[in-house]
Image (cartoon, rainbow, N blue to C red; front, side, top):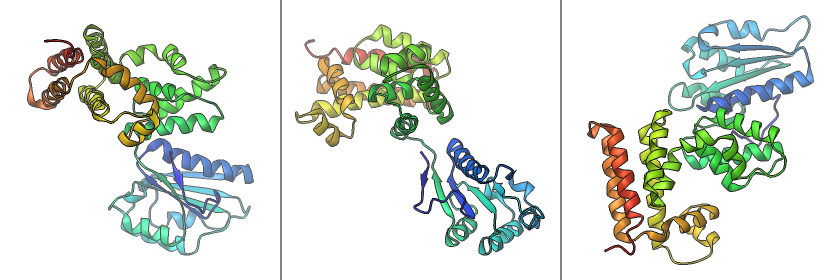
Length: 329
């Protein structure tokens, strides 16, 4: 979710949105535009790509108007502005015009850093819009989306939604909106399952769950469905690795309450309960065998083998057998 500075006046002369998460960048713009139009319904909004902001253009856009209208000027991909245009923007930052809000969208990083530094030095309101690459970040995003609507969703429901919908924040936000609009009361895992059954069954995490539970046939069915619906093989090996590692972590941890183990192992308490149920047939040797199988599958899907699908099927079968290693031979 976007993070804002303490200086959070939406109508500040300059807003700097930094990051590469498109949904969060768009929301940063929408918030400013909404605030401006709440102050003046006739606010003029100019949304510009770098090539549209030529030397002199900003001065034209921010020059005084006969009608003293409020204006929002949005500059996307500001890191790609030409050197001459950057000079114009820096000059403007030193003396911003009244009734005008400049919104600079910048990817962050080294490119265009001089402009980034100048905007910060000028006291721009800043909104962080980092790319959400970690599952934990996307899970936190979904929780925040539900909280923002004033609705309650269980931890299991939030995780199921992330598993089912995937990594696209727009799709996750849309899914939350749909559930909130259609469902009354607390949203739980069963509700998410009803709405997203096809996608949930095609989820890489469903493949992993069935495999570590020793349910080979169901895991293979979920695997084939996942591949048929376009799930990337690397996501499946990642999910398998997470599932097996969770078994290994919990099996080697000292006993305790889920909350204590959650802090120790870096898992949410509800996941501790789920992994406890999944680990009943596992042995340390089984975990080692499964981890080797995941490593081989990972190499296979990343170019080390001729058939990624076969590499995944083999790993799933080995993991499912390892899940039933306790009590065998």
